[in-house]
Length: 218
Image 1: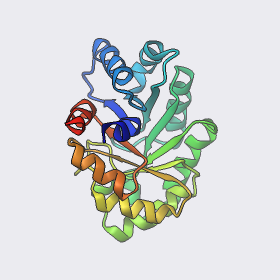
Image 2: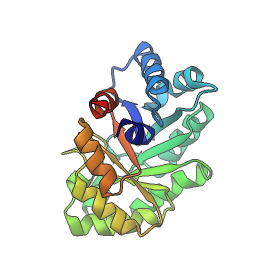
Image 3: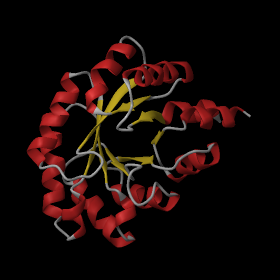
């Protein structure tokens, strides 16, 4: 099972107090365990890119994170800078407050603004599903998809709750093949990781990747 899970894992360290030394260690661990990549804050993208230069794990960074309270032009500028610094993929948060009052057009505009500046990089859009009931998640997914992302993502790990299997199934159904799904937030065991994959998640964002693959190896 570990060989199945490791390539789906984005080894994540997004704490505000994460140090350069911790990011360097994160990169070493990603290489050692065969993870898809590392996910780090924009400030530390350049360091991660230098640590992983010539190696297979990719560098993922975050935009409008974790609050989703950034205007589209700033989110776009943040994404552009992250890519210039070496990010291979971008995970962005939708404008949560506007989504809560039904402003789907604002959600689409925000996604489209980031998509425009990173047209060739995988873009994952975080819906922070813990804030919304099922039917609202469906409509939000439609609004996000209008901005042409590559992935719908469940959670930041900083919101009301993390990912659930039901969230993953719902996003897979809502995407209808137009985007893949990343589960993130609270995935700490091999059983939980496997359940997310079985529900349709193509990627897993977790800070517990080593524990997960170690457990999976038995």
